[in-house]
Image 1 (cartoon, rainbow, N blue to C red):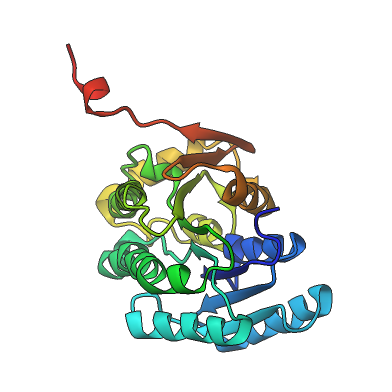
Image 2 (tube, one colour):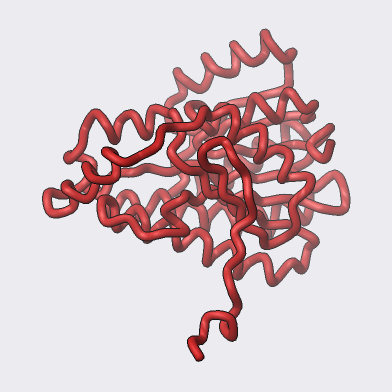
Amino acid sequence: MFVKDKVAFVTGGANGIGLCYVKELLKNSAKGVTIADLDPKRGEKVVEELSKEYGDNKVIFVQVDVTNKNELENGMKKTVETFKSFDILINNAGIMNDAIWEKEIDINIKGTIHGCLLAMDEYIPKYKSSSEGVIVNVSSIFGIEPFGGLPIYTATKHAIIGLSRSLSQLNNENIKILTICPGPTATALLQDLFDKTPNNSVEKYSDAMKGYMAVMKGMQEAPFVAENVVKLIGDAKNGTIWNLENNEKYEVIIPDKEGLLKK
């Protein structure tokens, strides 16, 4: 019930898992949700559809490129102007395409950093409606294990885990930071990977990509991920990492330095 009457900001919220997060927040009586995404036509269509289902004045769209800090901050300002508070940030925007790896780094890492710093330094401390705010950073199963098919994408998702774990140690404004690592999930992002391989990789990585696809057990549905993320927003402890794979949820425990040292 943590999300009841709270205001959330979801990047990449107009499609895929991001849209499922938005719907799940609204199902659980969020006061308001901001969809931050690139395509205004798609965004306004989603707002219209969600307003019919969940009521007017519950969701807004802001056109945001997460690599642009000013655009992201303007979206957060509009959120506060509209809903009068700011409680939850879900850093969901991302791409999976090593063929354009500079852009991949900008969106996956730089975009997540922008969101975290703006939310931690300004918006959650000033505008949270209760004693605690929450940031959810979306990594991947490839943030936990290596993957030769998409090494640069994998590096960006490892970076998100390091960022989240480090920021969670600050906790100076009572902001809980969680990391979510979904396994293969039925979304346009993953379908695009299937359709365009090896174009989403580079030639020397394509065999590893095809090998992974050949042994992949299947894909979970996006609503499963969203339902569990909304539960974790209320239940999980600060700094924890959660894997959602094959329709199962479990906490990822990373050993401390002493545990990692070989005797």
